[in-house]
Length: 203
Ligand SMILES: O=C(O)CCC(=O)C(=O)O
Ligand SMILES: [Fe+2]
Image 1 (cartoon, rainbow, N blue to C red):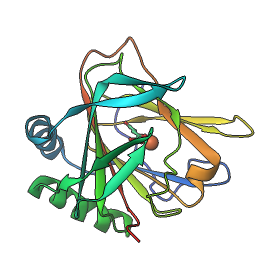
Image 2: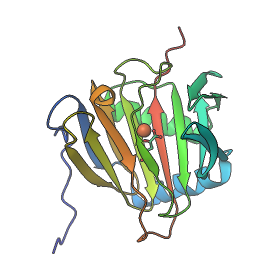
Image 3: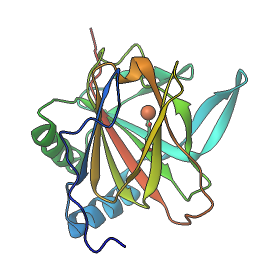
Image 4: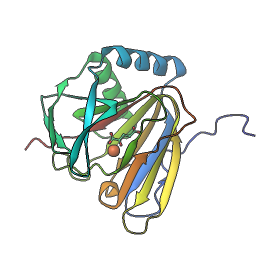
């Protein structure tokens, strides 16, 4: 039995080799995290995403949105999206994350999973538009979900639970050598919102 939350060590690398993943634990109070969750549920222009499944485009149940400091174009699954302008809340959170991580970000991909039946399959975020080896900062709200990494060659896996108001950072060669996913689960009936702050190379 765990009687109190153990503080997570943000300096510890969760990956055994070929990349860096740091879990900061909860960086927001319950009240702040609840506020952001409610705001994003109402304010963000959520749209169904498209994914490629055996070469066919299918619509996902999960919803997504793409925001940035410029109308950046971002291509994945052969689908190009143009960023909407950061809202004041996204900007405030971006500033906080930049302070916490000592890195900068110019865009944010948001995902809304309505319940545990929605997840995200194994992938890495190495798209051409992203700055090479740039840090990706992931902030999670509401339902606690498991998040997993798998090495592309050794198949070694590492997983953790992402809490409400928590921050996870993936950096260095992580995207080259590791896949990550959000596994679906029957145990969770509540929504989860995830934000990944990224850097787009517009050159
Ligand atoms: O929902 C998450 O925790 C991760 C989402 C993700 O991997 C992505 O948007 O690329
Ligand atoms: Fe990802």
